[in-house]
Structures are given as structure tokens and as C-alpha cells.
Length: 246
Image (cartoon, rainbow, N blue to C red):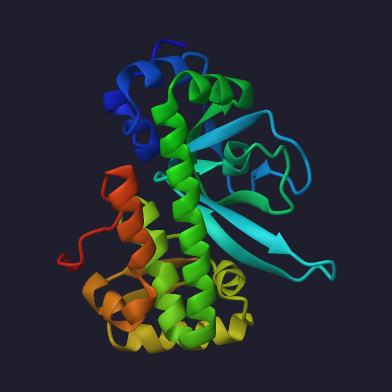
């Protein structure tokens, strides 16, 4: 495969790397199509590669001993799937798979470790990213405990909007119920409420963002802190503009 040009990649972590570290890290990277439901990390199984998402949306899901499942994070072009290896652990109980098809760059775990050892700035960047993921998770716990369902739904829609291209979010009601940890019927009702104030247009398998500013108003304080932390530490913007109406 010809050498990748850092200017051409979409992934923000790869864009934030020093040029020489980027060249070394991606020298043997593989560009892959990521279909819906493709599993990138299986629970309790070691991985050979991490994946820097270029397009699409990966969902990280926690499952209990009774097979109760809820989404605990998602990764788009801002991040990397398999971030647990940065913390020097080879497996995780969480499972990560594609909710929205796209593409990504596979990098061997050994290559990631080698480049992180050779370039401390790369190791620091990846640890900062893991920290941002932890803040996102802690804010999700706060939202679940202190915000109502339509505020939480607005927050998740904003997070998905940040990570996907365009204003159409190809999200099923089943996925939204997994994100929120509620019944599908509850998601449908909340979508109708948000649609009623003309922030979104929901159809089968798709949510179109009509007025992001209204969506941010609904989400209130449940959205924004992890995004600001990401921008502070990674140095690149993740939040989409709230000014444009569709």
C-alpha cells in the first residue's frame, strides 16, 4: 500500500500526531471497510490490531452476567477502537462493534506499542484520549442519574452527530434503546417529543438533525464537558456547529 498522507486522513488522533510518528505508525496500516455489526473487539479476547475510525460509528457495549446490555461509549473519526491496550491490558469485558458502517485504518498492536515507546508524545496523546473516554463515561453516569430521558436522548444524538458526516444519523430505535438503556417504546415516545419542537426528523432507521441549537438546548448541561476536554487535550475540534439549520 502506498504511504498515507497525513493531510488526507480524517481521524483526529492521527491528525494530531507528529509527522514522523504518523509515518512510522501507519507504514503497515491497512485500510478496511467496516460493515454494520462488524466486531472490532470481542469481550475477553485479545486483539491484534487497533482501529482508527475514518468514517462510521462503533459502539462499545457492557454486558452483565445476566446478559443485560447497555452502550457505554461510541467511537467515530475522533478516536480509536481498542484503547484498552494503551493501558497495557490485553483484553476487556466490553464488546465493540459497528453500529454505522464506514471505514478505518487497522494498526498492529505491536506497532502501536513500539511507536508509543519511541515517541513519548504519542503515548501522552493516547493516554489523554483514554482520559477523555473516561470523562465521557462519567458524564454518562451523571446524565443517567440526574437528567430525564429526552435530555439524555438529545445528548446521545449530539454525540453521534459529532462523530458522523452529514446531518442524517442512520440509527435504529433498537440502537437508541441500547444507548439509553430503556425500552424501544420509550425511545419512540421521546423521539416524538423532540421531533415536535422541530429539532429532528425521525424516520425508520434514521434521525435527521434539523436544528442542532435546539438539540443542545434540550440536552442542557448533560452535553459539552467531555467535548471541551477532548478539544483541550487533543487540540482539535470535535463539536459540530450549532448555527446551521437544515
